[in-house]
Image 1 (cartoon, rainbow, N blue to C red):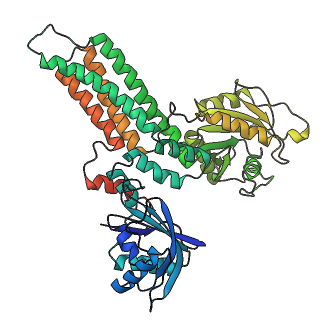
Image 2: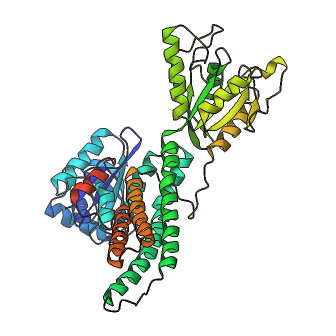
Image 3: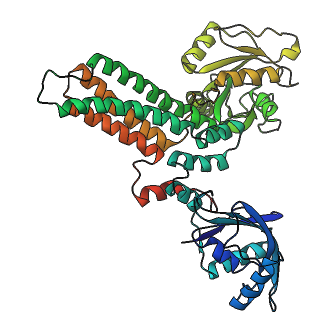
Length: 469
């Protein structure tokens, strides 16, 4: 079936309508002033979309003019729009099918009318993600690459863009292919032993070597799975909690970072009663800053709720900014150590405009002297925050997993391989070890689509795509 859809957001100066399927060029020729059935691939054609389409006699006359290189409008026809049509022929297209893209003016009336004409002449409106789904089904990309298309469209900063582009280029798929190839070798050795099970003393796979290889494979799978936490943080914004005593300048700092008066600033202690969140980009990475209620002893029930939420914000944060305006006591230092645990902690000495530039080198952690009021030291603070995030450089050797489906599959593969490692230690029989290795292989194949067999699973994956992609 040939499908069509608007591929651009309405309201712009131009709009693009995509068509894909075996009758793409034939259907398009019925509403276009040129016959595109035998058009050369990867070519662009100027012409007009006709309000009423072309009749058989119209087509004969139009095709005669086309042979002369003319853009002919059949008699008694009215022009809907002046357009450019890009032609792509199977298998060298996005979907792997014959396809075309109509670039026309962005009028809602024009776009809707063109779609109506295409449907009236044999097209069906595409479902969300159907073009990319066809690309996957026709072998133009694997499933992880198809999912990267949606991530690329949804990317909001350089980091998420680079991750999606890396996955779309097949870096993640290549890594999985390497791991599966290693697992296949192990499985083959074990199954070769089973073929010669009559010879009990015959062993093709040295068990100690097999265990080392299995542990090495599991290390790579675990590393990929652990990157999911970073991937999710990059997609949603790395959470950063701003904490400290009351009236130390937390809200002023948040406003300074956001370059906006987002939080109320007052000399009155306990002004911030709840957490306030907003995001900014630092060097292409989104950080989600959380301004918290000042920590102090209080009998105010509402303020205490805010302080409790401050502790919750610390628990959820990856980075904690501890804002101080005087040298903290040993008790305060011990409290912050206990609260932050293994999180990245940056100590910020505020109010440096008052003459004290001592940033207090405490706890062997990064520290910065700033003036939140006047903006002094903010650039250095942003650099310290970026470095604390410890974002890995994306290469073919460094993959960041952002998809929950991929993470789930990696963890299940890890569980299967862990059973193999345990089985080797307990001298489990080769047939049982082989079964667990097969499960790991099948689970990794789910990520790229090798084990996806039901339309329901594919539907769940593509239903969140935008229409036209």
